[in-house]
Image 1 (cartoon, rainbow, N blue to C red):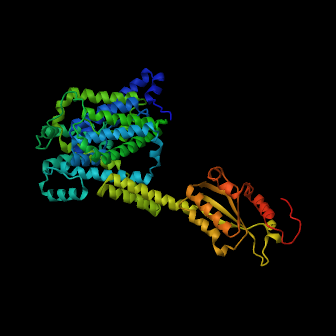
Image 2 (cartoon, rainbow, N blue to C red):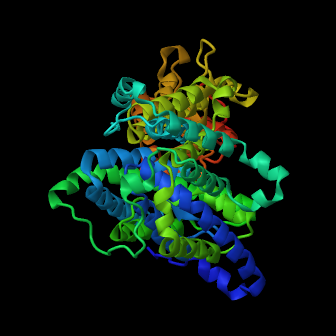
Image 3 (cartoon, rainbow, N blue to C red):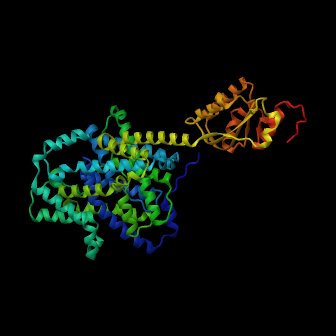
Length: 563
């Protein structure tokens, strides 16, 4: 197998010019400024330090843009990872989170090198919508503690335990924190409308604007609220230490399942983001190259203290709307974040956690496709069952279980639907088949013809039993017209072999006609045609009827006309 490795950046450089650099520069700075509050907010919501979020955005974002398969993809920490990262940290600790991220990176890299990028598209939209909406609810619930300023030492990752703890500490609401959170939330929700009326606001992303306004308000009013400085001692104004995470080999086995979850979600979200971007810039990304870049990003980011990263739909869309059209914009976005950390890191100590919780809550509200719930009545019951099941299991239990359940349900419903589309119908033979020598003395036909429709596979092979039903008569020749049989699997092949054997025991000959390429290829390779006999495989139904003429003795004693 030939392994292709060609980042999209290489395709852009030959025609790159100063005009496009100006657009990429503006877009990169804009997205970099937007990414700063999101990286800190997502990290804190995930149960890790804001520093880890920032370095994830810098390192992973740089690698994804340098080596990715999309022109405009922006990588970094995303809201979808929050419940997964929080659960891993709570169960295994931060060092093991880094190990799980690197293991997930190896999986993503392997998926890209083995060209599995196209397979991600096989995940049904019902599963994607279900877990996306479920993740949005989990993210929203995780922000209640900081949004209300509740006095809780540690918030459980499991849903029912989390609700119990939040209810038990509801009386510890901090009014200044709540007031600031509500103000920031309302400001963000109505920011786009304000930006339409006031031109200067259009240049500042909403999360950055609320970060500045919320921080200035808390400082000016001297609000007694928790900040990044009070909880995390600020953000170091220096480069991170580079090295392997301090994890034990004994923990490796426990990290395989979390790593699979990170890899699966990272692959789905990055390729979904790239597809959305393709529609915006009329381009086509390379899904395998994108997975290679995502894998390398998740391998390297933990070496710098970062955690799981993937393509970010909101930041990628902002990049496109700001004029970014090449990976240079993504590179500038990462360098902008780096410059901010090295120059303005001390100011981050004053950022209130209430403001960051409001930002994450708005992200959760916007990431959910809530209109799909209103439209459920328009779809089939199996569509509704899959979507709602994945949603509920994601919220109540675990994303991995939810995706597995959704895929199993979708597969079962698909099998059922395909089996319903597969039909075997009795064909009325034309006048030529009504010649006396083709009839028993009682007038019943010595020849029966059936037509197969659709796919003869393991979910529909039982329909061959109709040909053996005593009510179908006891013909001496059975013609099976496969003109409309488009697919045959090995179980279907076994069903045909059983049919041939049972008919042979009755003294009945099986004729096939109208074989298509895939069924015909399998039947030839399996030796079925040799067992039936080449003469009993006909081009079409008229030739099969003619073959029946030759097989049956002429009871009238007349001359048997050749077809």
